[in-house]
Structure formats: C-alpha cells, structure tokens
Amino acid sequence: MDSAAYRKKLMKLMAAAKLNKEQRLVVHFFFAVVKKKSRVLEGMSAFDESVKQKEWYDPVRSFIAGTMTDYNTQAKSADKFPGTHVPTTNPGLDLLMWKLMSKKEHLTVENFFARTTSVQLNLNAEMQSLAQVGYKNYWDNVVKGTRNEVKSEKPEYREDYYKTSAGDTYNLVDGNLRELPPSNIKTGYTRKEIENWISAAL
Image (cartoon, rainbow, N blue to C red; front, side):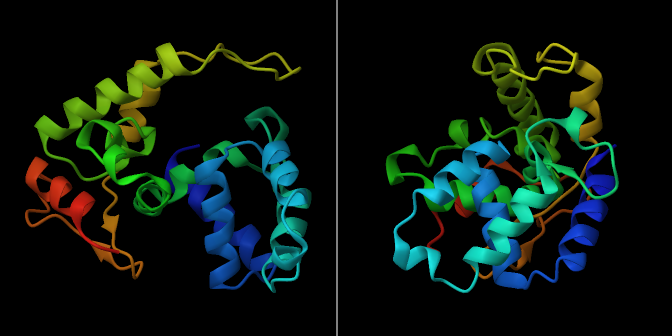
C-alpha cells in the first residue's frame, strides 16, 4: 500500500470511530512521537489523572487500543491499522509535530530531513537528495531490528520503498494546519523555503 491508500484507510477508520478533529490530531501527535501502539498506550496510562479527564482521552485511547497495531503484519484486516504508518498518511502534519516537540537548537535542515516523512514532500531535486540521505541513514543506522514475532522483511533501506515515498508530493502545513505549497509547484520546495518554514513562529 502507498501513502494514499494508507491515508484513505486511516480516515475511514477514524470516521467510523467518530473521532473529531481534536481527537484525530492527538492520534497523529502520539504516533509522530512514538510509532508503536504498545508504547503509546503505556505512555497514556502513565498520564496524570487531570489529563485522563480530558474529553479527547477516552475516545483516543479506545481507538488506539482497538484499531492500531505495532506491526504491518498485524494490520491485514480492514479494521486494523499499523501505527508506524500514521505519520506517512500526512507528512506535513508529522513534520509540524516534529517542529512542535523539538528544542529550538534541534530545529535544523539536517534534522528536518532525518524525519523519513520528509521524502514525501514536494521537494526540488537538491532537497530530495538530502531527504534520501536522511531516509537511508534512518533505515541503515537508526533502526536496529524488530521484535515482530511474525516473519517479515528485515528492516533496512530499500530503494523501491524510497522511490514509492519520494513519488509523493505532499505540502508542509503551518501552525493553523493550513497547507503551504511551494512557490513553484512544478519544481518543489527549495532550501530557503524549508528554512523559512522551520524558523517561522507557531
């Protein structure tokens, strides 16, 4: 499945669960920070009671517990979704979450391209080459393995997977969740545009 198919499936599941905009945003936030269902639920259980009383908490927890999975191999049915693919369904939003949760000194172009979702943006050739370096580094040096008990592919950089992701042309989004397309849609975001997005106040 490509990102469009994953996005369509996730939106359908969220609609079926009657999640509102805030609750959907919280789901995206949790899986931008932690990509595994089990770890997200563990973190949610540790929240202060005041947080657990928020209107979004129970619907979000129920959705994650009943719908999300830790691994792709566990999400073959129509009512299950792999948490690792939540960020790929909305790369602009994932990168906004990165910006929100990063310290100012960590908001650099290099760290921007360390997010694997960056390859899915509408980038010019120069920026896409930087995104590919970050994508490859993630799969070759950051991912150490898998605890998936079901036999699956070894987690490593795969050129065909990269090309599928690089074929996307998603936009960045601002703090109001509005899409910000590149000034030249045909050529894609320039380094200056990405730097400006990173430094813009939220």
